Amino acid sequence: MAVVVGLDQPLVVVEWPFGEFEMPRRDKALEDYIVTLDVYVIQLGWVIRMFDGQSWHLIVGPRVTRRPGGNILVDMDRIVVSESGPLEGEVPIHGAKNSVLKLMAASLLAAGEYELTNVPGIVDVALMAELLEAMGAEVELAPPVCRILVPEIVRPEAPYELVERMRASIVVLGPLLARNGFARVALPGGDDFGPRPIDMHLDALRHLGAEFDTRHGNIEGRADQLLGTEVLLEYPSVGATENLLMAAVLAKGETTIENAAREPEIADLAEFLGAMGACISGAGTSTIVVEGTEELHATNHSVVPDRIEAATFLAALGVAGGELTLAGARSDHMEMLLRKLSDMGMQICRTQTGIWAAVDGRLDAVDVATLPYPGVATDYKPFVVSMLAVANGVGIVTENIFGGRFRYVDELRRMGAEIRTEGHHAVVRGRERLSGAPVRAHDIRAGAALVVAGLAASGRTEITGVDHIDRGYTDLVGSLRAVGADIERE
Ligand code: EPU
Image (tube, rainbow, N blue to C red; front, side, top):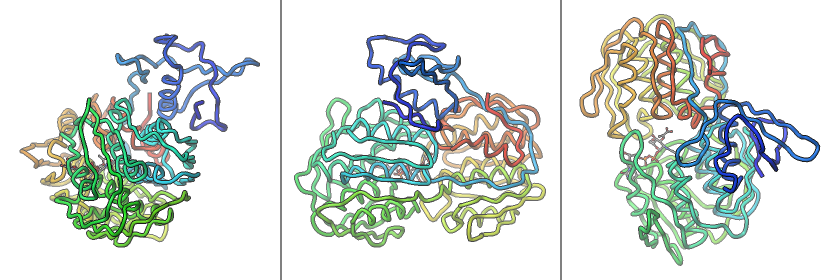
C-alpha cells in the first residue's frame, strides 16, 4: 500500500498498468516502484488517479525516467527565477527537517501510535518514512501530520538503498541498539560537501557499552545492556549527540553528555523523548543529563519551526528588498544570524508569532564565520554568500564545520558573482546585480541559495538539481511566488 501525500485521501495502489514510461521489470516487486512514487508525488505535486471499477490506476506525467540502478526518477525538473522585488507578504515557516527526521527515528524506541504535527512536506521525511516502514512500522504521511505505528518487534536494519539516499538515516542506530540490543545500518558514504564520518557516533555509543563491527558495508552494533556513564564528545556533533541521547534514555543508570550539541533541534528531540517518558535535563546546553528508564511510550508532538527555512526567506528579502513576515519562525533560535543581518542593514522585529523584516536598498557586507550553535550555522552560509554577492563592499565567509562546503560558489560565479575561495574562506565582493544563467544545485542549501541569487540576477536563472531542494523545502517556489517573486517550476 502506498499513501500518496497531497491527495485528499490515502490511495491504495493495486495496479499500475500504464503511464508514460516503461515499467523496467514486470517481475520486480511493484512495491519498489510505488515507494519511489511516494517521493516524486511530493516533488511534482501531480499525478492522475483513475478507478476503472475494479482497480486503481496511476498515470504519472511524461517527465519520469529510469535511473541506471532501476529506480525511477523525475527527469530534470527546473526552477526558473527572474529578477524580482520588492517582496511583500507573509511566508509560513514549516517544521524543521533536521528535527522531524530525528523524532521519527526516536519513535523506534517504543511500540505504539505516534502523531507528529507541523511536519514539512519534504522528500527527506518520505525517505525516513520508507526507512521506518522497512523496519516494520506503518507510516501515514499527510503533511503537516505524520502518524507512525511502531510494532512490538522492529527489524533493526537500515538498508544501503535508503541510507545512501539520506545520510541522516544513521540516527536510527542509537534507538535500535537501545531497544533491540542489535542494529545493522549501512555505512553512509561521503556527499557533496565532503566526507561525513560517524566515528563520534560510534565512540559515544561505545562508552555506553556497545560494540561495533563493519561487515559488507554495514555497521553492526551490539549491546546486551547499555550502561549509563559520562561521555565527553570531542566536538559538539549534532548527529552524535542525538544518537547518544536516544540510546541513553533506555540505558541503565545516569548518562552525562559533556560538550553536547546545543541546536534547537536537540532540545526538540529531548522534549519529544521527555513526552515518551524519558528523564532528561540540560538539553539545549553543553551538558545533558539522562536518567535511563526501562520503558518508554508513544506520544504526540509538534515539530519545532525550521530556522534554516526562515533564514532562506530572510536571504531572499536581503537580495530582493521589501517587507516579509515569517509566520511561526522562532527568532530566539536564530539570534546570531539576526544580529549579522541587522549589521548588514536589515530591519528586524521579533514578534510573538514570528519575525518581521524589511530591506530598503542594498545591504552592507559583513564577515561571517560558521560555528556550532549558537554560532552562525553552516546551513545559513550559502544564503549569506548569495546576499554578499550583491551587497555593498567585501565580506569574508569562513566555514568551520564542513571542509568542502563551497561547491556552489562555482555556480554563483557563473552568475557573475565575484567570489574567491581559499581553503575554508570565501572572499565575496558585492556587485550591483548578478546575471541569470543555467546553474545546478548540488545540495539542499546550495540549491536554495541559487534560487535566492536568481532573485537578484538580470534575465533568467535556470536551476537544475531541484530534487536536492525538494529534500528540505516545502514548496519553496510557491512560497516565494506568493510574496511576489518571479519564479516558477518547469
Ligand atoms: N563529524 C565527524 N565525525 C562524526 C560526526 C561528525 O568528524 O562522527 C564532523 C562532520 O564531518 C562535520 C562536523 O563534525 O564536519 C559536524 O557534523 P555534525 O555531526 O554536527 O552534523 P550532522 O549531524 O551530520 C546536522 C544537519 C546538517 C547540519 C549539521 C551542522 C541533519 C540531518 N543534518 O548534520 O544539516 O549542517 O548538523 O549543523 O540534522 C542540511 O540540513 O542540509 C544539513 C546538512
